Length: 203
Length: 141
Image 1: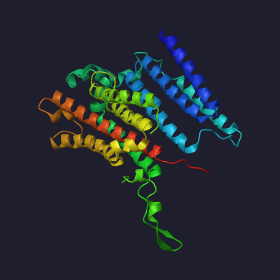
Image 2 (image 1 turned 45 degrees about the vertical axis):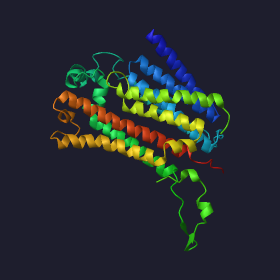
Image 3 (image 1 turned 30 degrees about the vertical axis):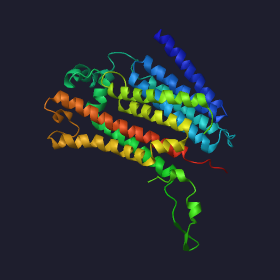
Image 4 (image 1 turned 90 degrees about the vertical axis):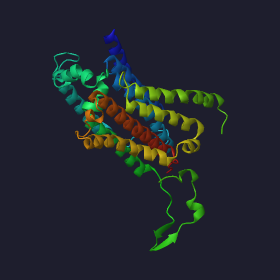
């Protein structure tokens, strides 16, 4: 049953991915990208990674779709015809894919309990975390927030840095009162400066 | 305001449940899947839904730009602040054992506080990024 779910979800993932590539309509592509994320979340659930699935469903299918739709409202809904032949990109993608598939040949079989990944620190976390954390049953939370709390702080900082970058690129602060133009300072007309009332609260 | 009554009514009914569900995910993170990150995204999704249905102007009235910017920073500061608090109490950075007399309680408090920090930052960042995208006009040409 699990194998059937795996195969069905992977086929649907592949179909969705190919359709996204072939679609010229960006609105449809964004919607399919959301469906792609939701299918991935289903795949993660089958692999018993419910925390990851939860994040994928909330971020990939939810917020990302909304943000991409916001981007579409800026750049338009139709993809332009490419001006060059896609032979070189195709070669690069095929080569990278071949290298990745070659790399998977060395990976230990999925779900094998003797895999090295399950015996580095995972044994300790699984055996000791319930006792050490005073009865928190979700090991994922214990690892993320306590054992690996330093890493999670770094991740939170990365998210904060991301918003700083987006705001630097996209957000508009208050319009300048005076601008330096043609070798002298000119005062900008106030009715022009007060164009968009809703953005006034930008710090 | 347009007259899409079903959309507006549906959003009004859904939003409180989305926010409550986010809090459930936050405080149930110790026992089931979920935690600060997921809860922050879901909490932000509630406000994004409000902004999509009722317009950006109304959403900014409920949740001004300054508030989301401050949230984005306060969460990280809360997280790092827990680290400094543990140092001040004689432990290592982010070593929650020293937060209470019983190390188990210390772990509970520590995890609760840093997850709260993650929630606040992720919520602020998601809404701020949405505001940044939705506040732009179409670039022509």
